[in-house]
Length: 102
Image 1 (cartoon, rainbow, N blue to C red):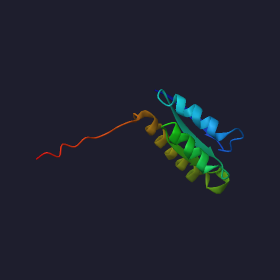
Image 2: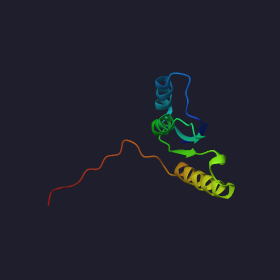
Image 3: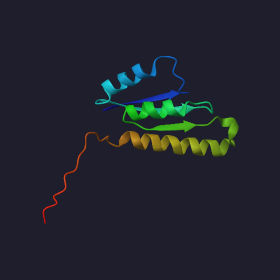
């Protein structure tokens, strides 16, 4: 499937329900990964968009809240994790049947 990375503050001016419906219509062939930028990011929307898109999300704080070296390391770790998730297959509509006959 195709992967889309959305960098956003999560503040959606349009109707969130319409956007989520659009994501649901396309999530069989497209995965959505979201990155929340800034301390005012709407965590709920960022997480919801990624969940509907069978992806994952990450939040990135502004540089001013951390030392540059620490910020760069945390940013690098978060992006590596996001790319790791991107390369793993998504599983949907999975079920397990256990043989309980002994």
